[in-house]
Image 1 (cartoon, rainbow, N blue to C red):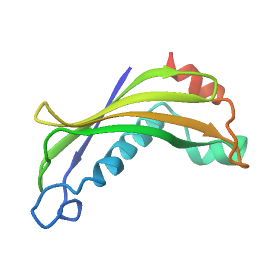
Image 2 (image 1 turned 90 degrees about the horizontal axis):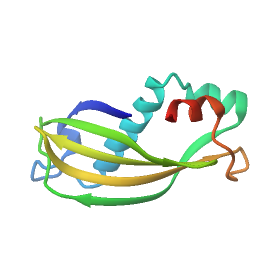
Image 3 (image 1 turned 90 degrees about the vertical axis):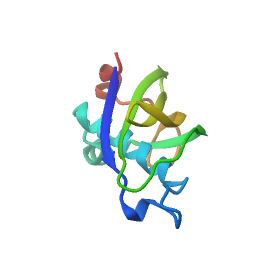
Image 4 (image 1 turned 45 degrees about the horizontal axis):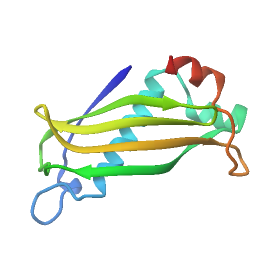
Length: 129
């Protein structure tokens, strides 16, 4: 399953030179993951309220390949690499016109209200297959 999330680069996303500030790619891929979860029908607010479960990034490996610039139309692609009882790993890219500008391998864990790892919710696990 691959999810695609389009976004445009705004002036606020760029540095003085008009290119996307490096930390903003992390925001872009976070938005991509959030929209992917939403498109699966998972309400993260209800998940926290009803089951006491939230998702947190545990590890990220990122590569910057080429800069994005002001007003570029980007696509964040999210694809599941693996899932275990309490975590899921996704490969994400940020592309412009088919060119990969940024890529990351992201490990996300499910945690409970005490901050301890907990099992991925059943509804979420069902959507990973």
